[in-house]
Amino acid sequence: MTQDQQHTKRDGFSSAFGVLAATLGSAVGLGNIWKFPYLTGANGGASFLLVYLMATLLVALPVMIAEITLGRKARANPITTLIALAPSHQPWWLIGAAGMMASFLILSFYSEVVAWVFAYVVKALSGSVLSSDRAVTEAAFHSLIADPVQSLVWQWVVLASMGGILLLGVSKGIEALTKKLMPLLFLLLVLLCAVSLSLEKAGEGLAFLFNPDFGKLTGAAVLTALGLAFFKLSIGMGTMMTYGSYFREDQNIPSTAVRVMAADLCVSLLAGIAIFPAVFTFGFEPAAGPALVFITIPAVFSQIPMGQALMVVFFVLTAIAATGATLSLMEVPVLILQECFFLPRRRALALTLAMLALTGSLCALTNSTLSGFTIFGLNLFDLFDFVSSNLILPAGGIFIALFVGRVWGFGHFRQALSNEGQLRNETMARVLFFLLRYVSPLLIFLVMLKGLGAF
Ligand code: PFF
Image (tube, rainbow, N blue to C red):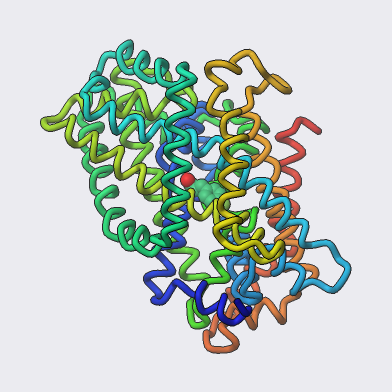
């Protein structure tokens, strides 16, 4: 296949709305429904939320715009993009290589959390988890994650379904499905919020989420908030560069990025408002960690008529949201293997899945067979998450910002951002360029040093 044919084939985003939906499909996922609430809970609530917001606006949004712009300019995978746009012999393509590694690390634990969501669809159908009794919902979750067979088999089911979707080429179908079903997830979250807000200790939950207490804010928490911003917007590892390569020439990149960021934030806040009032009312622990959503959500559903059916719908929709994000994560290594190593798409996909079955099992078994195994005090699930979200993605962000701010330069950036002069967004280009050149890299660097305890 020639380069041109590949482009025509890749050019899947045919309408402006399609671009928005697909980018949103990558951003909105378990990061919003699972990770955001549990990290906010574990890091003290409102102060963490505030830092997260600042990290999103000052750092993540400019980096997201930079990534999409670079990808659209070069119309290739992250490695080829950076080789094409950098002066020869400068190894900026290593950002793409690091991104490929991050993709494997993230998918290894992400696919396991999707596995829990799949398992919860079945549990919800059987009615076995619908309860406001903490002991019941906690026991249901722990019996799932502590069972090596269930953990592995569900992960394989997830990997096989994702592989199937990509192989059958029904990703367009998934996109169409996502477009239709995401509003439904949104509505269901709004309903959950209404139920949660009517609970006895709703005030305590809201205070936890919205009244900052900066005493609880550590350097590590700030780094976690930054890493979360990167993770939620799928940036720092080439995913948005890859999606940028599918963007239309006339797409307004900054406005698309802002909309994606705003919608992503909305979904996270709704998830937070649905969860924390219930956490306080039913006596759960806000710092319960990865278990938080899985033990709290059933308790909220237990309070409403048709709760069981709605809970099934909730987990199905969450699985669909997670699918969009998973597909975008897989697209990074698959496209690199295709374009840089000249593998046919099927083989690139098979290799990616085989690797994932291996590295993913290390995460699937952390709560059973490998439960005593830790490195730097972290089990492999948490270690993969920490290394990818708090190290590789922010470091990738530093280098992407530096690349645009110091190497690519303002002229190219402005030209690409304005769709070759079609849009009048010079001032915005200047502000973004200033942030990318001076603010974002320095801020990320300082937050990383502080978070890792260097000062
Ligand atoms: N943004 C996704 C989520 O919030 O669930 C996760 C993700 C997707 C992270 C793609 C990184 C990525 F490249």
